[in-house]
Length: 206
Length: 331
Image (cartoon, rainbow over all chains, first blue to last red; front, side, top):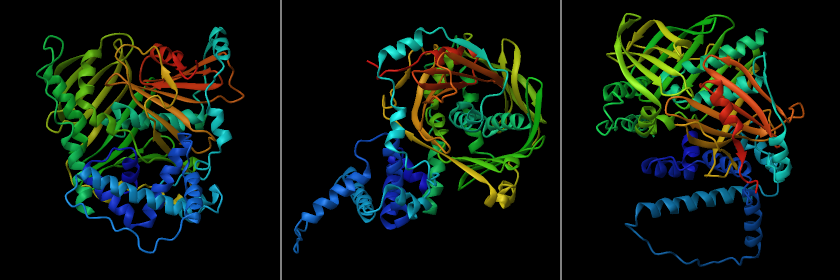
């Protein structure tokens, strides 16, 4: 189910799965948390201008000044609408659920969201992953000064054939991620991972 | 829910069984050989197997045991390295866990990108034809199974050639060799294998789970980027290579996400990882690390970022790709 939520976000589910997954999200609070967490991580990674937490505070401000409507307008039923519409409607509900959840947590700092129930959610990202601070992301910001880049290009680089095995982050993470993406994995199954575990072993014995 | 879950693998299975080879140029490709490749990709999703294989590369050789099971819950697999320090890889559909018990470490990847290739297969196959001469070889016996040999001969020096031994009755890959101009770069071969026997689910459980409380668990999380969102691209792609994916990934222990561009020629893949350089990284030094099996690794720094290029391709290819990675937000 957790994988499906993630796939739903990336638009990779088929129609049957979309309705099914959205229905499950609506029913289960854990899954709504899951959905919110994925969005939070996704937005943070994408350096989205409008992170969910901001939307929440804006919505709550609006709600505070909104008069209470005692006899709300009942929308007319639109039976037989195209499937896409019902999906869109479900999405709106799901988004509303996220906003609701965010409003519930709006008074708390970002970190506390990750520390609570959301933290139990499927992503199970290490706490260090989720609250990526904006200044930290700024470091990822590419070079905007062309002269710096040109200087880097002009500098005569030396290619070193390092006699030592690649650093730990390459062996432990990059090779795993690469193996997962490689078409050979589809053919050999897990076999390509052996390469990675082999190398890690060699390094640890050195 | 249960029925839905059961349907999903079936849908996945039906996906790749579509390609028509009728339009292929018969002078350059054996449609039959490509049909064999198709079988190799789908076979693991149709057969149970349990066996022992030997992986060898350079002077290094290692034996592993594999248990592979397919049922209504999908595809599950466990590999245990039998030589040297104990290591274990467990796959449960899209999720992969690598256990390093001696280091008390587990590395997990929740949502693999494997589906890219099962889904892209027809396209991937025609791309293979552009970059390799696909030939049907003779028949050879591996682990007591009659196999069809398929040769994928590289059309240039930007990729390695490959030789595959495919079990005629199941389509499973029983032996594979990566070749660099006639020299074997790496090879894996089953030495003992039972196909389609009953499999005890106990055999799929990780051996080191009991110590889980003490284990350090690292989860890899990824997010797909919209086109151009990453801000980096490879300007001088070697012929035949195309961009397959562009994601940002979080690795625990790293304060910033890492950009990942995935490239492929249909058979070989190259990954480019981009992250802020550390103080120890020299601005002008480029480094290539010793080949690990067929994998070559090359790093360089670009304007304060460290670019690591990894792929099962010759050193010249990782270097060409790594050297042409640019940030196109630079005006």
